[in-house]
Image (cartoon, rainbow, N blue to C red; front, side, top):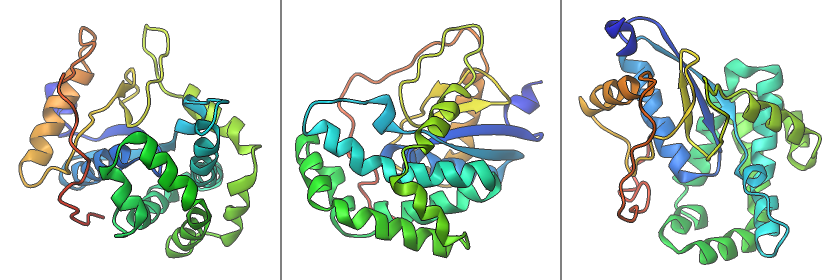
Length: 235
């Protein structure tokens, strides 16, 4: 059983992600490395911070509108071709988190300034998703989901699919990870993508805690550094 928990036998890991969230992206790139170095199969699921953090007040309402288009496209792909969602996420993430333009710079500013930046550049989000679809070899028609709120129900269903174990479901945000159907955990929230032996060492620590029903929460009290501050490209 211990060998299975540490990923040395085939383990299925379900990861919920938000395509434009840099924290989600950093953890997801770690999970890609985990899958490469252990007997872990990763299944990707979309989660919308725009829906989780719905707010009718301005400028938050407009900010959420900017963010929801890309994840709607992910929901559309997940519904029809779930096995291709991971590649689409990689292509979207490379364009938003390693592009060297405003999205990358937005990681280093305060939240209100980040909102202003996204609102000022909202028209650039859709073209990047179009590029990501093409690079993934997916049908260009998936972009129609970008402005279609009918996909919000699919996103809600994806949120509800997070296992809760014996507890009531409390969705905090992304990343959220479930190992072999265990109760989903928010995190780990990491600032940089681990390298070398740290990839598996962190996985062993996380999976051990995740599968222990007595484990509830672990949190550092200090402020978080900007994610991906070294700006290293990972794919």
